[in-house]
Length: 280
Ligand SMILES: C[S@@+](CC[C@H](N)C(=O)[O-])C[C@H]1O[C@@H](n2cnc3c(N)ncnc32)[C@H](O)[C@@H]1O
Image (tube, rainbow, N blue to C red; front, side, top):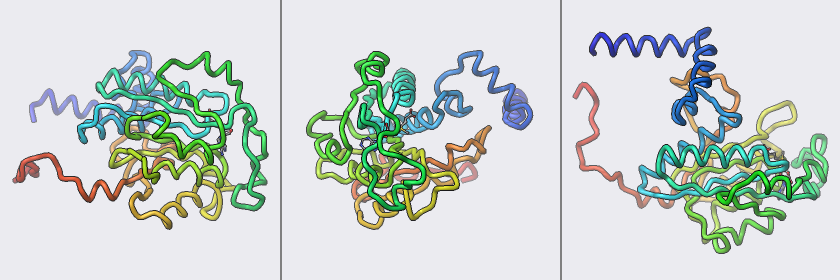
């Protein structure tokens, strides 16, 4: 390695170490770093969304797909959806992959009725929580984003027929209830489903004292995997490694839906023998 490059990589490594990583991130924020640098340094009001959308766009390019959908299940006031739209625009500009945004929510009525036992964590949530101010939210959104109001139990089935969306690239699940998350996950296994081979997913409600694998989103994920063979949801393994902030809480909330049926039919688009180790 040339001395200047070696010095550059040493400086980068030092910048990623505590205590230098915090001022470095501040400097990058002030310098309006590009979208890839922001994703690496978690510079975003919703870093999980930026990370997930950029990963999805990169996957789309590897798959030769020019357009993707990104979805937020559970919108409420809309801060998440507005951030999703903003990051989708930034990633689209950086990668050339076109990105449509969809938000599913009950709207003004807030959380629907709970199913009546521990699986919906009734000690935490109440019917009617998080009502949406629809007109205020719509005034904050652009045409890139479609708001789909109603219970996901009823709105998910017609999603692909009704909106002809490009393949799903990224999903955030923030519906709070086990019963709602279970309905939302059906979007991955409809006869009409179109998705990338590997769809990053962010699950918002899988940490805290009231969280366990017998309730909430963790139970919905487990039941999804128990009942489906074509698509499986698993954690994104080894995610923090090499990042300046491996301790960011959201990294533990990132999963991936793998389209096993399509992956079985896929072949790496490369001549044999081109993948080599640097010492071979
Ligand atoms: C915690 S809020 C979402 C917050 C939002 N993601 C953010 O970051 O600003 C949860 C939302 O999920 C919605 N929700 C829960 N169950 C639903 C269902 N079955 N169908 C549609 N929306 C549902 C509620 O209406 C509520 O607005």
